[in-house]
Length: 88
Image 1 (cartoon, rainbow, N blue to C red):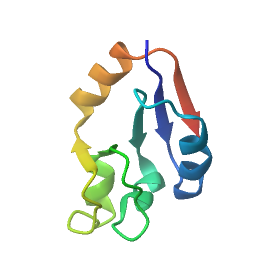
Image 2: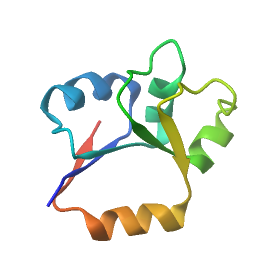
Image 3: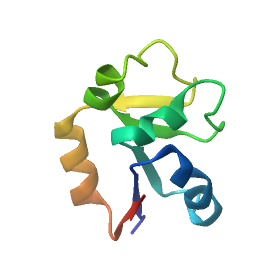
């Protein structure tokens, strides 16, 4: 089963990307959504929690490979992935 990486700071994305497998899901939440800004976001597909993106006013500044999800989709991700790894 693929891993769910939950990245809560922008600085934690780089070390996460070093170890994440291609089929792993990477979710940016909290201040981690700052890593989704176009200038910083990698070309790899990333997920970002919509509420955190909106709270920080980043909605129009996200990289093309970033897809926003809601809390219900977060629960679905958590159920579908094992293990879940938190990055700070």
